[in-house]
Length: 328
Image 1 (cartoon, rainbow, N blue to C red):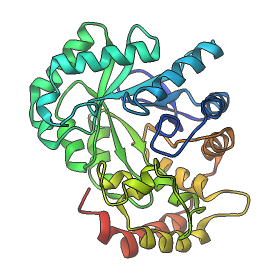
Image 2 (cartoon, helix red, strand yellow):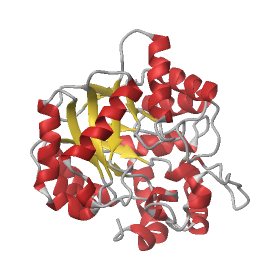
Image 3 (tube, helix red, strand yellow):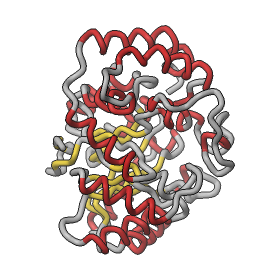
């Protein structure tokens, strides 16, 4: 597993990490034994970066990580969690020192640690980025020793650019994949210039870029691909990257020709993301060991050819960009 520099933290992280949303909830039922097996397989494959959040299964994801690492022993991976989405209503006024500290204290218990490696503000409302007191509160929590570094998880490129203005923001997490290419136009260059790490989420567009979904695919009632197709629960861009399902399926068919024999579409989609040098780590999810191993294997793929990169760009421009490019 190749490693990359994680901004100015001094960390060297596996370029493919473990996204722990699916083992917490909102992706259909995942047995705890399967969740632990998936996480162990990812760690065995060389991943040393885990991304979770306090709301994934109301803390279930964090607790599964805690228990798995305790059973496993040995060197601990870096764990990034998130705070803020427990707020109801989810408004910027809630991102105050008292609430943030309470969320962080809860994650400390869930993860069984004395200090959190990285805490990300969890897609806060856009006006939060214009409130310096929120970031000052995070500075205070670093000084208090409860967190080592902090960053933000954003919905929009504009939010990421604003976050870069705060000098102690160590990382920005953003959606970037074959169906969401806008971050590479300006944002990635600015993040590199300021030495801020980039965490890429939703790399497989909620499973579309595995090439395994069809018009007949069924999703459980508690799977966000069922209940959030139109943004009923949270930003629609988190589900299928905001691309209409039928449009996305047609684009997937057009992409099949770039997948060589013996390689999965998911692996090519992950390798496409890793072609961007600004990316520090990409965090696909996995519900079982086979998925975790498949994800990890993408790190060993050869760089994609210029012709392949151009074909992906053309498919995006022709089929996908009109639906998503200016929205996020």
